[in-house]
Image (cartoon, rainbow, N blue to C red):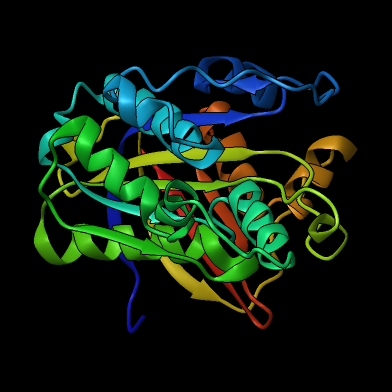
Length: 265
């Protein structure tokens, strides 16, 4: 990035343990009460036809839950929005199940599992649910996945002048892969970004790269969530937004580089 650039925030969606939606999550992040992680059931993906709804896994349900929440908050038309899907592992349950089958003598992977194994499967289901034909990007960058997704989406807004919906989400591998990549909870955040301050009334975000250390959280459980789930690297930004605070926040990117976000009116 040669120079900082600025976008505006029109809608937020969030889902995680004890954070079932932005309203509940905002209340938790805005308070000083201890955070106690607890499982939260994902809402069904009602926007999908029944046949597709029966085939989907947690990543599709999670991305749809956060994406539709951000769109509802902004009053936006999902069918017209460019979108970025950012996930470090995609469908971890499906990946584990396929590897288990490949370790057997039969090695017969079901077509449905294979279909859902690709990293852009949630983007495909999103287009079915919303009838969206706008540009769609699916990416991953290991622990830097949230910052990479935010930079990609914000860059599209800055270049095109059109809004873009970021959906960053992660799910947990079951054992034995969990021992190698220990992500303990599903967590996702959606940000609807726009070039127009009038249509992005929640806050402005000025993005730049920095060598400064990322911000941490004082609550031990929230900090554990931030460190263990790549998408949850967004939590310092979400906490500032939940409290209505302006100012600078730094989130993880790569080892020697972080993403600085100046939150303004």
